[in-house]
Length: 190
Image (cartoon, rainbow, N blue to C red; front, side, top):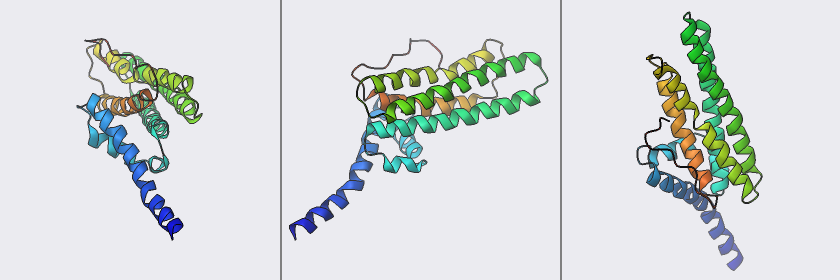
């Protein structure tokens, strides 16, 4: 009977632990990113069924990197479609900047997810944080390409959404490291 009780207790506790890991990660994220918030973090993870299988913060960070990677890939595809329809050569040049940084972000996010999947300690998480930090530059660089030309970005919505998703991935991955992630310089555009 004790064995049966123990098994039932573990079965009941198991989903709670995964849910608690997700909730803890999102609470921690929201504390540092109140403008994005807890609810957005939860919704982002709940939109991907792989989140349910993540048993720890490392798994959640890998899932978040893949979610952001998919968004970067979709944004790069949108940029390519916009560029193909654009008749102004200078605007196409600005779109080319965006396409390049988003394609780079796809690679960086894929590498970050791979680093996190290795389940090693230390360097893998540090390497992932470096890749995630680099990917987080994409929306700011894209917006700057248009802002410097006094042109309205057709990607403002996508840039803002990607920034939120990449911020979640970076924050969760950074919680795995012993050194904090780089702090953005005050006044810098991202």
